[in-house]
Image 1 (cartoon, one colour):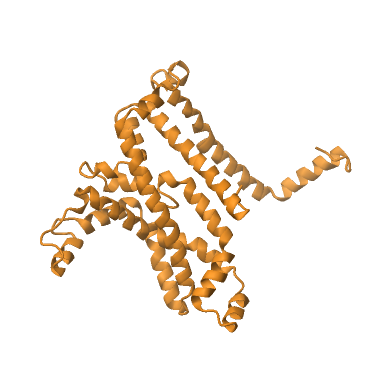
Image 2: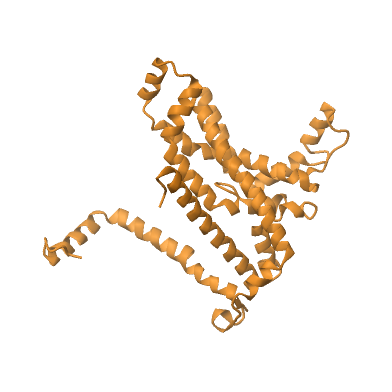
Amino acid sequence: MNSGRFPEKSYSRGMVYRFRKELFFQSLAILGGLFLLVFSYLPMFGIVMAFQNYNPSIGFVHSKFVGLHHFKDLFNDEAFWIAARNTVVLSSLKFVLGFFCPLIFALLLNELKDNFFKKFVQTSSYLPNFISWVIAGGMIIIFVSAASDGVLNPILIKLGWIKEAIPFLSYPGYYVAIALLSDIWKVTGFGAIIFLAAIAGIDHEVYEASIVDGASRFQRIYKITVPMIKDTIVVVLILGIGNLLGGGLGSSNFNQAYILGNPLNMGVSDVLDTYILRMGLQLGQFSFSAAAGLLLSVISMVLIYVANWTVRKINGDAIF
């Protein structure tokens, strides 16, 4: 709206002039908007499938509307509750470890004085993040395999801790430990980048002044570093809670369960993402699967709002 200070024509010309002047950046913004529209917003119309007996041969328009029927079936399905329990347990553990491990790792890395060793450790810790779960899963399967080409079993037998090879992925009890350890291995280094970037923005004169005052390293971490990266910690925390049911920040329950899961450990490895895939694509229950996916998305959205609200109440500041 024109404020009345400038003529309407001049205001419009100013808009056109600014657009032409920033044509490159405006083009990037438009492309980004189109990408979101095509790949994020248009597919959301598929949500209607959750309220229909969807038949691919007749499409959305002619499929029968059944309301909340699939949601009722979902809540009466025992396999759904098992998958939900596994998702909550695994995701909660991954979230706690995936949040604190990168933070502690970044704080410790910041205390290293040898720049060469520091960069070596940093680079080494990033690498697992760039290995796809397909390759990483294959490496983990070989590592814990009970076959002759396994790595862990021969070591444990040599140390005398076990007498014969253990097929770790065949036991549900071991699956949780393997999932958590492999998750920490993949996300810790890369997750620490955000905290290291925030730490790099702290004025070094603050540290020098604290050293003159006799502050120990722990006191500098506790009283300077952590309070000064508080906003970054809050952002990471909220983003992590937003993807809590997906495995936490930077993690993936689906990839892990799909690659490391098998019928023997399915009691603990089957999560909501694999449940949705199985019901939708493998069993052809598209509407039932869509209802489960919609429920998962709604819960994730509620978690984001609750986390944001909680942080605002505690900290007085939040993302939105």
